[in-house]
Image 1 (cartoon, rainbow, N blue to C red):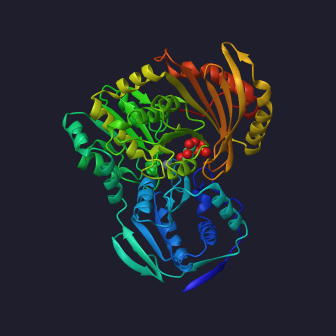
Image 2 (cartoon, rainbow, N blue to C red):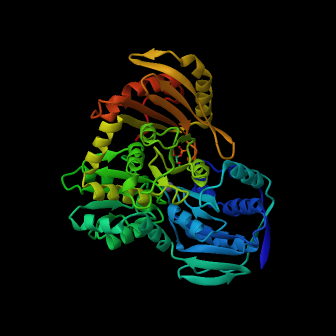
Length: 539
Ligand code: G1P
Ligand code: ZN
């Protein structure tokens, strides 16, 4: 029985950098998910020939939202929903499945690296047939549809059992429950030389992978322990939990503290890595050594020939504007295309689809390639292990030799969190007005060459996006300011600092960027306007 339910719009159903992300308390309100999903279906139009994917990172409300979405989809006449077993699929694995089976798109239920649970966050990412998240023109159509929504359709039916593989019907809609892990693992085996990785593991080389009680646990167990042969116990926090066991599943120096402490202890493994809530972010560590995501992208690009899938040659490479310029120097050396895009993986998709780029990455612990249309945490880990297997070098040696060859972009990001939205908006607007007057100003030995907003002209669809304000210094250093688009309340001001040194490569990063930090605070009047004299998170 299809029921039509009268509803009133929520005025906050606007997708940000990566899908819709809100406090669980908001999403669990009656009709919230129903309204949003109905708005997406209204924009999608005819569903009778469409097959979508549905799964999530297993966080609180994943199971309930899946049942709701299935019933709304059936009521709206969707042909078929492919559902991940028990509702579990990582963001990159979802992209693999959408592409491999040529689906029309899909929903990944996740607030990525944000904490989960009743007091945490919930989210929904919506992808199209490319396996990447829809463009901002589509997200604004959905927002509009949500603002004028008056009703939604839902099938009145008992919950369906998605714990077993197989096909059945819900109303007229076909449901196929698939293994969320298998296709992803096959893709990784197709890209990397698993025989070489097995040899590395058998040689006594040790690793620790921290799944942070999130979705990648079962993937990592299968790949690193079972298939490659790292000893049992190499993968930790591997059971996905609805609240991530209280962890903030963001793989960085602040939130992956347990792993970082271990890797800087006397017992450290040779290699350490972590992924985030939905498995698209990664952090790479060596013994007592941290690789910034900026350097990781540059090093991966520089070493493409070592990986079977890329050995024949790659297209170009892209980074978000806020990411350091480390990869730009590698692109130049290899004579490949180089692009700078706004923050958010969706901006890489056109470049990959049009074969302009193979690799891409963001400073926010996201690295990936055109094998899918999302960033890919386990892929990055396998890439690093493959470089190590092929060169026999330690993580630290690989990074230091890279800096010797290309110079080093010292890089740190400061986040000022929980700022009043109006205060943050005004700060950015005033700063933007001030930018033209900054050129030529000197602070000690640092002179501003140019200051302007970052504006992206998409070479494929011609769309124009403004994202962030950038101050360029004469010596290649940069300060970038942006407001976060993934928060669930208040505003976060992100300040990205990069200091380029061609020769002086073994200094402490914080010491190196501190002069830039002072300038950044002063120019934007952050302490005066926010009351904060220090960043809340430094990564
Ligand atoms: C953050 C990161 C951005 C990333 C996004 C999704 O977005 O900065 O690089 O693509 O999460 O993982 P932000 O909160 O800065 O808008
Ligand atoms: Zn994520």
